[in-house]
Each structure stands twice: as C-alpha cells, then as structure tokens.
Image (cartoon, rainbow, N blue to C red; front, side, top):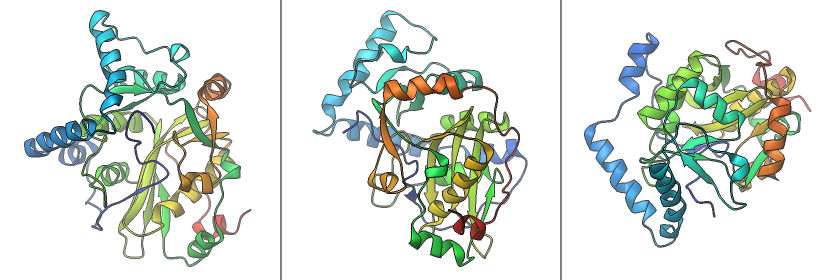
Length: 305
C-alpha cells in the first residue's frame, strides 16, 4: 500500500451525469468553476484528517511529519533530490511553489504534487506504471464499443470542464479530492503555456461524458486524472489519445501507480531508478507543441493494431 491515496489517473472515477457548462472567457469561467465554498473547505479538511487518522493509515503520517520537520529546520524553495530518497519512500518534500516553471522542473525530476489538505507534498513513488503508447492494449470489447460511433473525442477543447469533472465527488468513495481550486489554477496555467493537455469525450447529445488531462514532459506523457459520466467513456478517450501519442513520437506514458485496470491495458511497473534514468533522455522541447487536435476518429483508432 502506498503512503498516500492514489489519485485517479487511468483508472477513472465516475461522477454523476450533467451537462457540460457553457463556455466563456477562460478567466471568467475559471473564476466560476475553480472555487470551493467555505463549507466545502471545512468538509475537505475534516474528511481528509479523518482519512489520515484511520488505523490502517495513521502510521503513514510519519513520512509527512519527517519532511515537515526537515522543512521547518531548513526552509527551502528548492525541489527535493529524488536520488536521495529511501527505497520505499514516496513523499519527497513539501511544496512551496506551484508556478509553471517549478511544476515542469518537478516533472522533469520525476516529482508530482499531491495532497488533500495542507501541506501539499512532492511525491515520487518507488515504482512507476508505464507503457509505450504503441503498446497500449485496447480490448476487443472496447474496440466494439468504439466502432458503434456513439461518441466523439476532442483534444484541448474543454480543459476547464475536464478538470472540474475529475475533481467531482466520486461514487463509492469518500467525497475527497486532491484536485482543489489551488491545483486547478496551477494546471490551468500549465494548460495556457501548452504543457498540459486534455481529452474530451462527447456523446450524441453533445454532453461531456468523459475525459482526462495530463502533462507532456518532452516525449513522456504523465496522466493526472480521468473521469467518466457514461461507462467506458474515459477508456475510449484515452485509447484515442494513446494512438495519437504514438503517432506524434511520444515514447512513454506514465500512470504513476499500477492497478488491475492499467495492467490489463499494458502498463507495467518499473523501479523509480529506471524511470528517473529515462527522463533526461526524453526530456527536451515539446514533440507536438501547441494545442492538440485529433488526426483520426474513434473508428479509425478502433481498427488499428
């Protein structure tokens, strides 16, 4: 078991169906969407604290206390040294800055942010779940669904709607999310700079019924989160994205943690050292800069091998 609750990435979370919000200028729309009521903030802190104090998880507070104490003794805005982490450590340090430059530097070092409540942490798991885009497995059942033509997939069309969907309450789980307004704003800035990309899945009624977003780090794509409002919608969307990532020259997709669903899709675990060793080789200028657009429809992807 990991030291923190694993965020929803390839194994998408289900949220209640609703119409996609009307679009408007980014700043105005984000101000309306990227917010929490005072009651929601209190509830998140209460539930987050209760979650951390569960008998099975209370021992996991020790790494948080350790990095917090170290930060108090020696406050620093520098990113943690992932090479110095203990073999089983996940939490590398505390976050003091989520500017675009800092976030991209963190991803280049194998770090990513996480935390339901403050302090937010830099995380670097002992193993990473990765797959080559060309090796992503689409099951026969999913291919059949894709050939039915019930959905349409777009890229970078409704980032705000996607990240709000990813942050929405989960079915069968505590209403607890790490995608807070602060995190939404940080990834919104990365989206504006062309580092974050979203995929959207629309049904025949024009409703946003699934999607996800991630960070392009050179030739590596790091999945952050996914959601669905109709069964298999996010799986269809990611299958289309994986096809494009392979076509555009990406060499690795990072889902962070391995789950049964990701293993079935072709992901495999590699040691942290192997993952960190590959990043310098693949880090560099974006291989597909600018806003992304689809170059193949769902049926074309379903028919590919």
